[in-house]
Amino acid sequence: MTQQAEATRRVPLNRDRVLTAAVVLADEAGIESLSMRRLAQELGVVPMALYKHVANKEELLDGMVDVLVAEIDPPVSDAGWKNAVRLRVLSARRSLLRHPWARQVLESRSARTPAVLGYMDSFIGMFLAGGFSVDLTHHVMHALGSRMWGFTQELFDDSAGAAPVEPAPEIQAAMLQEMAKRYPNILRVAMAAEHDDGSVVSQGCDDQFEFEFALDLLLDGFERFHQQGWTSERARLER
Image (cartoon, rainbow, N blue to C red; front, side, top):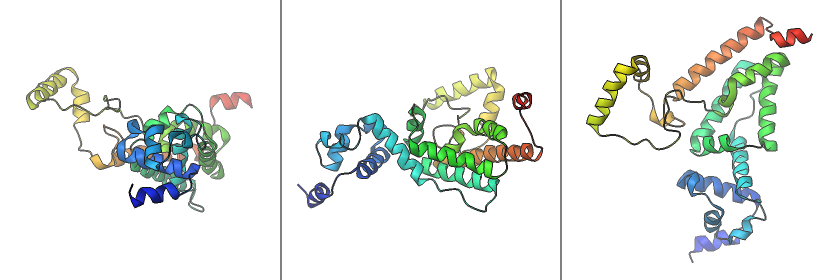
């Protein structure tokens, strides 16, 4: 047994240490490699020791999301609602990019922890503090969707999160030729720009520029509706 392992055993086990180790393991080995048994090995404890701090793997994953939320910067005071929202979204995206597993886990959560609810509440609060009506804020949050977590559904992604298999060059050329015949508009748009692989959350076109471009379009639209005193038809009928 190494001195490092002995030192690890001497550090008292608590929930924060379990969650931090789980995040590190998922970052390094992938979320598929995360199990209670593997995590216990990393911590130098028996698997049953973990259950004193997390009831099961689902609670472990919820806790990992809480770690992710804690990394997101709080709202910037005196920045104006538009800049505050933009900064917060981009902070969430930076956190997401640091943890390749984060999007998959976020999308798999069926229950919201207090940390997640707190993040959502403070996010909504930025619009309300900016003078948005409750009605407009409701629709704004629908429009933002998963973008408040730093990711969006990717238009040209058909890999469903799986690692793409590169076909042989001659097969790829034939596929592109067939695509050009059948779906010329899709191919033209999909091939129009190069993407920065280092900034992509998953496979596809959602690189940093595309993300910020769409975010700014939304924020500009929210600002225009707010200035116009926009109200939904349903809210008008309920008055």
